Image (cartoon, rainbow, N blue to C red; front, side, top):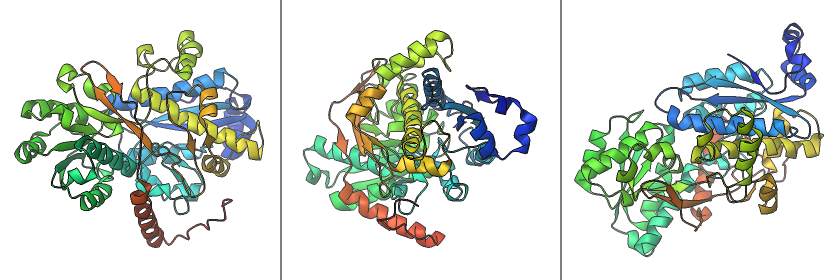
Length: 442
């Protein structure tokens, strides 16, 4: 595996000496903050995984090109998972000893597998918009950070929007809503929230699993055609999304009645369907396009200098931008940690975790970072490892995504009790002690 280091130092070059020293000491001498990058550039999920990975890399290159994190440059190494959990765990084990202080698993299944490992290794997990929904509870899941939203917040927002479309939550009674989902931990995550909402609002919920990777969906859409639900929620990823849209066309199911999760609302999901996908809706977790200042900075300081990770015309796409956001939050966690533990120093995993628990990115800060119009402010704490639960609805017009201006916030009156119950169950199973609310130092 090739180390893609952007700040080559004598400590790293002296491989003999490095082999003799502990990873933390090597890292400290190198004055580099090491970010492992779990990716999937191969297989059926590559069209979606690749721009996500490219956005993360390009943001690292931007930070290094503009001075690093208070002078600390970032090094990184990619490891190909193919979206497979076992390969993801293998990548984690391979890279953690190289000074890893932060991991973005880039898959819900891998996140599940690493959740028990992270506390032992003291490496925080950023799972922006994915992962274990209950890990919003920082008093139980001390090392998981489902920043900006979970599959419970996503599902709740979709039901809120459908209720508004129907004229009120009371109008959902008697409606049929089908969940066509990737038959994996990712696809199953929204089910508890949807079941809770079905009880509250009186709609009929049908669950239609699709075997990975989702290329064959004939039987699933036969069920849709037979039951004719009022709405279809699509919890897909990769090739599953475009296949679902093609099947909807073939079965005559109205695309305007389909709503995808934010992992089913990117350019690769609709470009092969084109005009036939017109009217399809999805959650928008972030803005996109080349207008944001941060994207302009990446084009100027990275791509225009021939250092871009992928094609230039991909910069600013939905998933590319999400990768940029994820890496920015990791960088800002390190920067925040430096404010407490020492500017210009390489932070440990425990120190980065503190930074992640004390993120405070208001609009002024986001504007200064170049993220105006890209995302909403985010503020985390020991108890709240999510920091924001907002999203919008976007609609495909046949050639591009159009994001509605209205933001929806997930209903915490529904979600918080579910998070608490799930957290307590997990703590009981793992024999964990819930962190004292007053103690934010451990």
